[in-house]
Length: 158
Image (cartoon, rainbow, N blue to C red):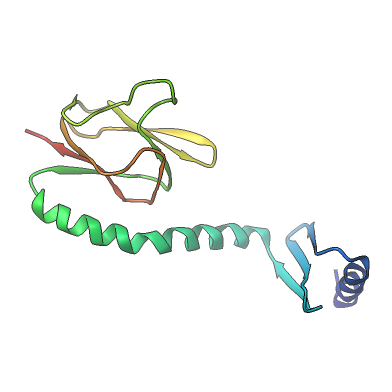
């Protein structure tokens, strides 16, 4: 698609009264938005680049508070092993809403036990323990978003 075709498309969209038009062809994605101030904006991107930009922006904002809250916990609970999230997603303590939680504080776990599930892109990933011990603390609320490497559980290995 050349520049003249894009300009004709912009004029057509402006005359039609549509507020937004999206067009995807091969490796080009064009979005034309018409605003209240009668400006027309064109965003032209390769679809492969659009997804990583969104994924990088979302984790950056909550990452700072997570680091601040986990630093004091690490110094106070240095004798415990921290189980961290291997992926970005939504943390669930239960396999489904009507089932009991996988683990509670005080639960004895062994290597390979399922501790929780993390939903990422409509896939539910079971998170298994890599250590044996006793759950001392659950660090994340049920149905909360989690970041990569965010602490989820504290385990007493003794």
